[in-house]
Image 1 (cartoon, rainbow, N blue to C red):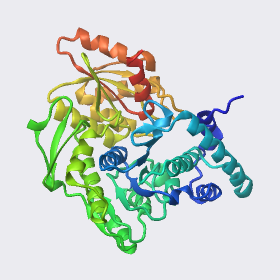
Image 2: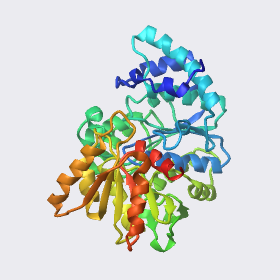
Image 3: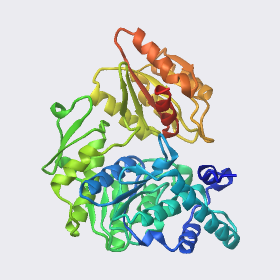
Image 4: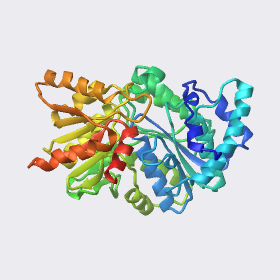
Length: 433
């Protein structure tokens, strides 16, 4: 029988949350330490780290460097979690490397007593692929936290970055912003420059302290030097100037210029180290960046947007993007969330901008059911003096149902699908059936 790499990686017993670096290091040792064969940029954060990674990788490609990109979760295809120069790892190569990783994992399980997790397997497979492809750089997104994340086996990245921090995964990372900042700052390495989003003061103090302890130069993105000009925007682009560099991006989220500014600071660190990175190529790479599922217009008539806002901060960013790009408009929200998120606060954030809700159940074991989400919305709306229509749908029909309502409404409202990256990929695919 043919070996199914994706089914193996997603084996339920590999999903346990026993975090640490020992298993990953042991697997990499068995596989010849592929992580030492490419230069890396390591990116942590609560929100925006995927987009920031995409900006950095796109610019490095524009500069002529062969560039790997490791991110999660995926939107359309499992293989998009591991990419080189914008191309997914081919399934046959994924299968071959996974078989090699499986062998290493079995040795590790026999030695250490526990099997590597799904994310540890993915980390090792990604690093092996980047080494095989002779990548000049690999941009590596932290999976969860930072200090104990399997990607933190990278011993000496060229630069680290910490994107916007917020309260998420509190059961694992701590329930204060200070505890979360400590975990995320665990990626900071001795003498390695670190770029940070300008965090709230208590989190910033921790990042500064840990950077100082590691003799790591700290660069904080300066949003006072970021000019976002509404006149430069259109339905498909957002224009901005950062520290004199004029850029435009197809990522329309109101927060994307800030993510780009963090990426630009990382790239300027690399340029100062002597890598061939010009301001012209930074602007070119920012413009060419594609990152699905983040305030992404997937259909124009009627207008359908998908957004991966999966926590209260993400929901607030979604509303900021709605107001920035479509002032005064309301939306039909297609919403699906994971049960371990603060979905009540998410509902409260979007309620004032909602015409109706259609709830779905994300395809994930941690999903909140569409019924439970619908019931919560029905309980919450009257508290805000709203009487709003809520219905449940399956993933395949939810957007079609929403578009039917939108076409009947003379105001032609937007349809926005959000709440979980695990559901928006399936929703997006349903449009193309």
